Image 1: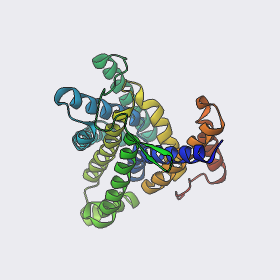
Image 2 (image 1 turned 90 degrees about the vertical axis):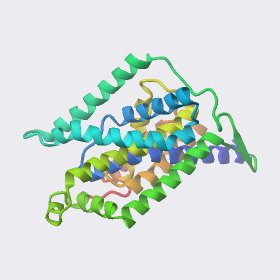
Image 3 (image 1 turned 120 degrees about the vertical axis):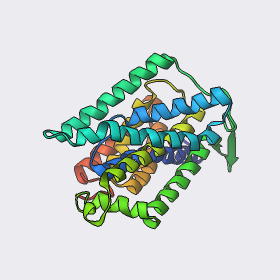
Image 4 (image 1 turned 90 degrees about the horizontal axis):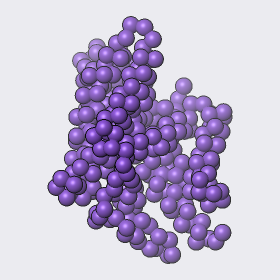
Length: 292
């Protein structure tokens, strides 16, 4: 194990960690806003990847250019999911929590089944893109261009999120609804509208992640499963409901994954991540940046 190998592993982990953070951001946002875990989150990611692939096939649009269009489409899709599914699950008169779980889990099953029906279980990929197969080299450390672009998109997205939350009326309404969704009606805030916009924003975030991942990752109906599991771990580590906690936790997950792959067989690279998760759950159940 050389210093260059360690540096390469850490840089690779940092880049993937930023992408993990972007994948997890929407999940953290929705939970923090509504106290609802979206068990169809992986299928949202899968849908975004297929959307980027479809735009490439239909009009030869590079995934990087397609990302804003995919995010906009996912924003609409996320809002429709809230209005058509989650809103009714939340209004259940009994066992509302279980109804929400089964509603989003069932939605994920339906979305995955439709993807298998429409696209078959075959693996697909975008054969050529602006960044596909390109790398940069700095001091002997190789930086894959797709992952580097994904990390930059993640940083820009979290920067935009910070501005939205802290510098706009919508962001202040979002924070107020998150703090007390019942009291906001007294000051004229329509919480159902905020919930719909929050779901749309969360889906848009995963749409950006899906467009980036489509550059270098295979696209198939079950692609969301592995990323959603990492997203759940990331959100739990950062603290449920903390968007910027998910940012820090995503980086940590990426670094731990890369470090595990350095000392363990590649097939066991997630062992370190899940061990860290169990440690945090035992020592700090609310997560690194969460609050009880």
